[in-house]
Image (cartoon, rainbow, N blue to C red; front, side, top):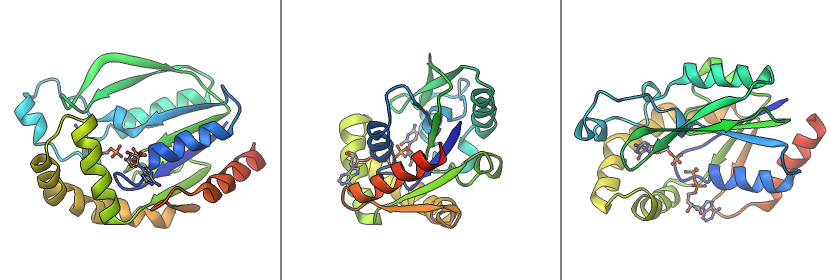
Length: 201
Ligand SMILES: Nc1ncnc2c1ncn2[C@@H]1O[C@H](COP(=O)(O)OP(=O)(O)O)[C@@H](O)[C@H]1O
Ligand SMILES: Nc1ccn([C@@H]2O[C@H](COP(=O)(O)O)[C@@H](O)[C@H]2O)c(=O)n1
């Protein structure tokens, strides 16, 4: 099993890159674990309280559960990946059965920040896009897909997202084996990643 970690700031294009990599590999050989599925359970908080959570701080993520799930996959066991709602800021009652595959991709803003998780990766990738590009993408996406308005997105950006990015995400670029520039779609980088994966398999 090859475990690949794909980090990068919000809106850098991690999910897009993951989908492009999946397209390059034979069907059924890849499974994906998304850090977003592992926001801490906050069942005892009201919606108002949940909206105030700093979602870009490592404390917001249940890294122990991600590590536990990855280790289970490595042992050939199926896991129940939580499903998260960005609309309610909460885990739903659903889970997704995630089966072990030859290639396991773990993607998320903070996945290279946690040492125990980082140590499980065979290949570490950081997707880079400029700050203004990421903010534009984030505004568009959060309004169309995550039920937010422009004030919510911009306030969150100034209050937590930008400072957390500078403190906890950008520095983890130094851990990456490969940095993908993604201001524009980058097919050459995807080809390189595919070649590296095939070599390692
Ligand atoms: N290279 C790119 N050029 C233009 N738009 C992109 C590019 N990569 C991603 N996007 C768009 O930006 C938005 C955020 O991309 P996404 O892959 O969800 O980022 P992330 O998972 O890092 O938050 C999506 O609407 C996606 O279609
Ligand atoms: N309830 C939540 C939880 C997280 N976020 C934001 O999601 C971003 C990470 O997801 P990406 O797909 O963009 O990598 C992160 O920056 C959090 O601020 C949210 O808005 N609401």
